[in-house]
Image (cartoon, rainbow, N blue to C red; front, side, top):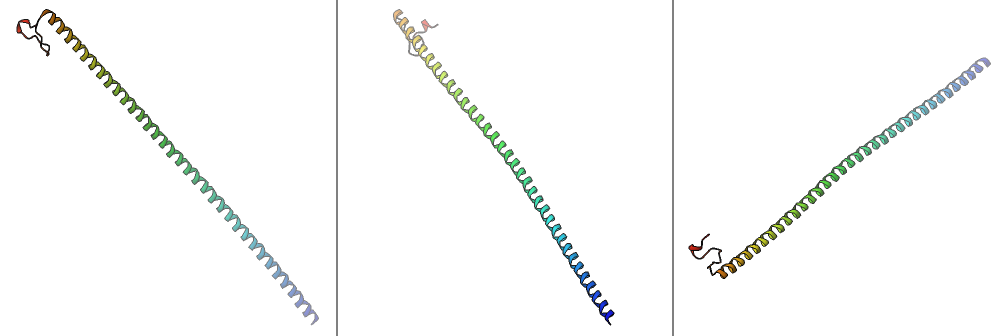
Length: 140
């Protein structure tokens, strides 16, 4: 009976040891599972951060491209505005020159008319205000 009791105690000790090893194995397995989950979550977080970084870079590149297009359009509009202003300036100069030319031509014509009238008055040849001789006898 003593031997039976001894075996029972050894078997109980063995069972406790086995249970203890099994619990330690479960704990180790749980720790490994938790560590693997943490590593997976870390990798996922790094991947998300990398994706966000790439997305920011893409958006920055798009914004830079848009800004470049805007700058090009503004530069083109500025050039067109300057060209239009220059064109208006040239047209205004041309009109002023044409007006001055016409004024000088009118003054010259008036001067010639006056000189011709004075010449004809001195010669007593009738001359009309239209610049024609009054008599067909004196026609040029």
